[in-house]
Image 1: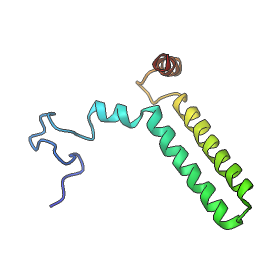
Image 2 (image 1 turned 90 degrees about the horizontal axis):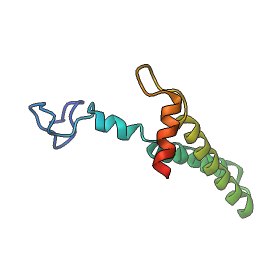
Image 3 (image 1 turned 90 degrees about the vertical axis):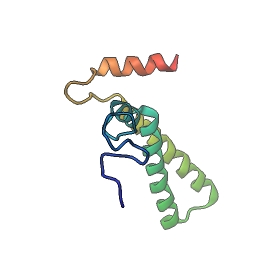
Image 4 (image 1 turned 45 degrees about the vertical axis):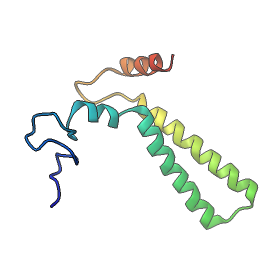
Amino acid sequence: MRPSMGHMPGASPGGDGAGTRTDSPDFRRELNHSLHWTSVISMATLGLGIVFLMVERPDWLWSIITLVMALLVGVILAQLKACRPPAKGGPTLDETCNLRSRRLE
């Protein structure tokens, strides 16, 4: 039997909030964390770089340069995504970027 979409394995069936739920504020905060998106976008651009290498078959130096460039593009895109204005009711752009810079200190 498959669990319902709103519950993760180990969640309490009563819905009292004691278990892990996918609609909880903690889950949403972790899902929107900038490190999570940096990882996801970087892996996607690395995957595109690998597909490019499989099609073009450059020598080893250009292969390394291609993968480094793909990784840099992924990190830059993730940082741009992290500082974009949030949806209605969320923190402002300044609050988002200031919060992230405070975490780095």
